[in-house]
Length: 221
Image: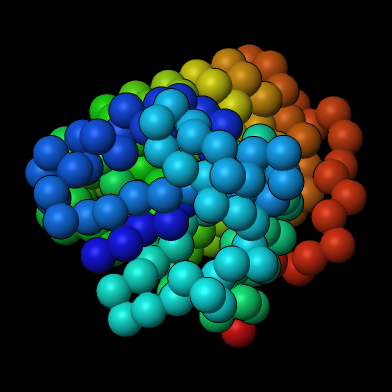
């Protein structure tokens, strides 16, 4: 199988790529990036072939694409839609040390080393979870969600589409986090958060509203 990774920016992706190859030697990797200055270069030894315009040319029966862009969930959503609209079939880029038993996972997941998901967690499409994050039992994670390193989500929490959760944020049990929410680094969320809110602090409080022109973050219609 060939796996093309969109976003040649984080060297951790290359280290993870080598871990995947050790467990699945037949997987071949290359990067795509929409920055033309990177085209035809090597990113830590891995070729950067071009941008999303190559999807049609690269497509094949055993070809999949995963978006590694995580700086903004809006940008992640928009660039994954670019891939899908160009005909890409989304795959999974998951560290082989992660236990996926009793997990329901959508397409296009990017899960780094040390992620722990308890039983009956559901992940939407195009979700990215960074190193050392924990998702408690029966958590429901929406589409195009991003969790930075060290996030801790307690059991039975619902996270809406497009939500961005900063480093070391904590969400207490049985809460509902709305769509396109931003949770600041180190925040402790103790109550439900409405759609489009930006929350910070301990306990987390709303400081402003996100202006996002999308009702949800589904990449498949």
